[in-house]
Image (cartoon, rainbow, N blue to C red; front, side, top):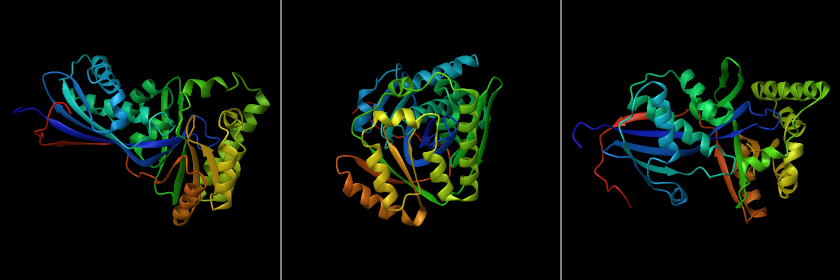
Length: 309
């Protein structure tokens, strides 16, 4: 193993849309995907979290596929690695688990093949895999992000240190993103588009000025996706009612669902968490904070550890 390099990659999860900010607004959350990568003779993926054992253990693993595709784009072939992966991001629950995996793959490709990618370039590449920049942008940059994609690429604005917490109510059953996408209308009229865009604009302005009451109102007035998706989630109305009664200023689907994100001022998060946990004992209720830092990768000394568990 002499001369072989080793890295530790840490990527935060995220919540996206935030109500009316469809496919453009995101918040990085303090749940993390961690990948320890050690150069080796062949690709091998070793899950350190039980939930990750369902994924392939060889180079067909999604993170490895991202690494190889990014390096191929630059005409390079990455050195194989053993990847030791752990995560406390719930899978397939709308909390950015797939976006975090994409970002981890881009970060690893960058160091394996000495690509010297800027963060803006990483975002552009990650966005191609994910399809929209809200989750990957939050995971890369941290904090609150406002983004858009267009024919020339991606633009992003980041805002640090919003004094809020997010209490997530996470059902046991998953909701496939494809099912959640299929209920959305294929078109909006001009008037509907203008109205929905105006609501989104006021939502962003309310976040930036700390007008939490207005944030909640604009979340509820979303016209893009929540009126269509909430009918897939029989628990949504109950969570919204209880959260509002115990201090949440806003409630929104996290990504495509089924997780419901309840937004609360920082000092009130613990109280809201306790009330939601007692009211919905069959669900996983977590109090999360904004992850101010995005993805990080650090060179480290290779560990002597078994190649499989």
